[in-house]
Image (tube, rainbow, N blue to C red; front, side, top):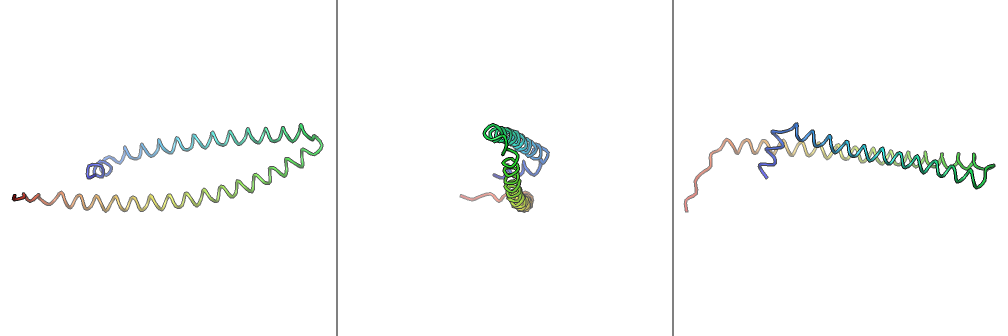
Length: 116
């Protein structure tokens, strides 16, 4: 366990690189989700248009308003999750710093040989 902490503390570039790769894949999935949402929106609009061409503008307007409301709720939930994640990362940095201080203090002490 000590080697893991010392590796993280001494190779911060590697840790940042891994974090950036993870963030890239998260955003990649979000872009795919947005494209899927756009496809669903187009299919919904087509359905409303083909079933009742006279009423379709009103149906589309109602569907768009409902989608905007739900998107606002999702964004608010995402902001809360982001803030919690930021708080957890801050606590993780504090813990890592305290552990690295303890490890560096322990390295200064010499090991006492055991007498069996």
